[in-house]
Image (cartoon, rainbow, N blue to C red; front, side, top):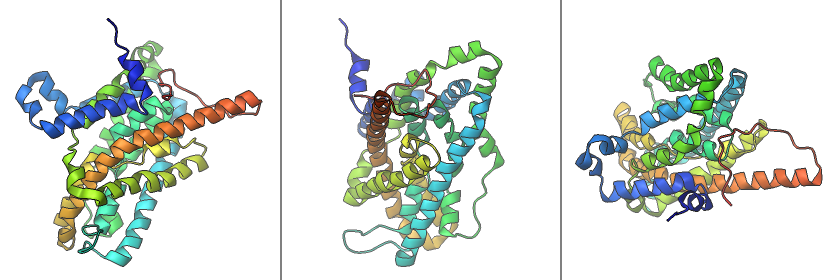
Length: 342
């Protein structure tokens, strides 16, 4: 008896990532202590997203050639700069009308500048590199080593103009790049190591999805209601449009830009940290935490679908241009890339 599991997953937009993510989120929502209950290797998997990402970066790095490094810096810099500038713009506009306090009445009750900026200022790295493994190019995935600089409350504090900004330790900067650098070193010194590690990149995508899902609680969407869902939609579609445009203006096809239009899970921790650093934001922190958590879930679900649809559109356009005999800029496609779902 043979069940075409892989084929079925590939029929779902972003299915290699999204289906395992959904399974993980359901498990975490219904049985949040399952990891502690089973313990051992099963329990470790419930909290093992960071080690999985580290291994993924080593394998990914092995596929990258040294001459690709300037491209990674360019791509990562463009996406990071675009996210920061967009968050600053939204922060300035919202701050002018809302100030530090949240809206207290009406359908927008609970919305604050803090919630908007925190949701925009941190990208879901696991989702980004997994989507790049499916739909993008290997060098685009490596751009997260630059995007990772936005992690934590630092940029949110800068955007909000809080005095006494939290330091961003140099160890964290180096640690974000080391696994990728190690993989690049191995792959460039020995092609056999590259051949060994490269095939693991697409194979790890479902595991990253499941591990990421095991950090998501679907109750956050219910608690935040329509406003939380709207914030997630804003991050994916409005923020995604900005990133797509920035990506295309710098020679990309827009796939990487859309894949970065998410809210990272640890962004839900930022409002409380901000309120501790500056008590004036304390009234907004509780509502902001719930709204950002909802944005995490909504963006994690929608981003793979939107990215998949755009990747398929790009592929169809390139195929049409080739059929018509029009010149198409040749773009390197990694051997491990999974074709977009039909």
